[in-house]
Amino acid sequence: MRKYFILTAVSSLVVITLLSLVWPSALWLFAAALPLTAVGIYDMHQSKHALLRNFPVISRMRWIVEYIRPYLRQYLFESETDGVPISRMFRSVIYQRAKGERDTVPYGTKVDSLRVGYEWIGHSLAARHITEKKPDPRIKIGGADCSKPYSTSIFNISAMSFGALSSNAIKALNKGAKLGGFSHNTGEGSVSPYHLGYDGDLIWQIGTGYFGCRDNTGCFSPEKFAQTACLPNVKMIEIKLSQGAKPGHGGILPAHKNTIEIAQIRHVKAGETVNSPPTHSAFSTPLELMLFVQQLRALSDGKPVGFKLCVGRRSEFFGLCKAMLKSGIKPDFITVDGGEGGTGAAPLEYSNSVGMPLKEGLSFVCDALIGFGLRDEIKLIASGKVFTGFHIVKNIALGADVCNSARGMMVALGCVQSLICNTNRCPTGIATQDADLAGGLVVEDKAARVASYHNKTVKAAMEIVASAGLENSTQLNRSHIYRRTSQTAVMRYDEIYPYPLKNCFLGDNYPKRFAQEMSESCAESFLPEHYFVKSSSGLAEL
Image (cartoon, rainbow, N blue to C red):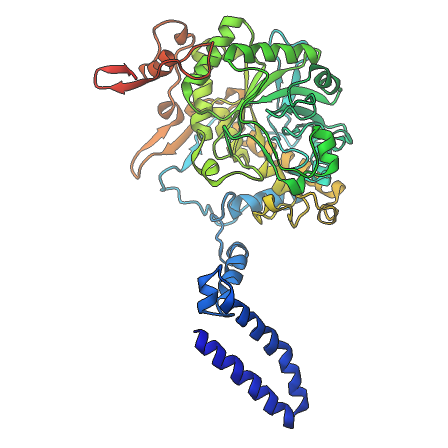
């Protein structure tokens, strides 16, 4: 192809030259021919790409097509049920509810109800009527040791930091939370001035980097924590042990997003990539974590304190439960993040293959708390691909009290799923620190959309609850949800995820499927001191 290129280039230049002798305007053709010739000569002599050396100029079409492929697929070829991580069907309903447009669909479902994994709720012949007044179910979070319990909505904004999101995006989310009467999780990037501008309720997340409450060495600072934790806007404290998109990895703030302002808020050096450690330095065992919970509760003047995790090795959560019983200290809530959780930047392997999915993680955590007699004292929050009222209902039926959503709220802000959150070039001004791009996001307009999306989605969830013959979401349980497990078999959630007996882990009458976790776990260590594997004769120690 190099010979063909040389022949074509030389021939073109000769033809243009001859043509210009009789038609002087033909000289303008050199404006295209000369640059293309120069590009081709460069392609033949560069050493990085064999394709360019062998097919000068024309092979560049490959990179052009690769670049526009996602946009062509999304806008021209994607069906209603296609599109990842959020299908067009769900993006559309979020946009419609955010804008206050008609959100009904004609002509029946586009979902294949015969596919394995299809799920639905069993409605009741004694369905209840829901009034036109906006339903506003609230859940009280705060145990016996909490002097300032918080009444939260069943649907809230999940953790997204200032840094990952622009200042205008944070302001719009917070104002939306204020308008809609729900809470806004700060993410591990600390409480910024933009979180405080509209008086929306905040859940302050404390990550492994202790941003906003760290000393000069990067360790936890009780004094700095207390200064922020006692602000009236801060309603709860969440210790982030891990997140679903990259559990065991720690957060990543790319250098191009780490501005001087963000660095000052986080107490780090500007212009450098900031990697949060994978683990905390303030504690190293389950018992020490419980003491840290107690410390933060005292420093925050009695506000609810909990922790967030994506479930990994199940025995480690059993160790947490044993530490709660041994110390007598219990978190007020636990946020369970699914392995399908989203983030602005994560290694592919972590996004795809690390961490337990939400259904399995949430049901397991709920079962563990029931078995240890702790479920009545600790509220559960579910996070991971929550977009619609049915998603809320499914998670509550499985064991959650409350649901959080990050990507759903981003779509309500105007996210078009361009999938370039990690480049600082977000076209909608949401996931960027580029002032020009962020300036395109109008706070007042997007705040109203966030509030509208929340309110209409909660209403949809409560309509489903009423259709099941229930008065409120707390009456949901696993017997209400069905899943097709094969072409000919259907099972209820309580059959797929059977409940354990209350307090069964306090004795020996617990399900044998948990024998390994009980044998490996202890309150004094996250990692098992002895690993057990299943063998033909039972459990064998490695």
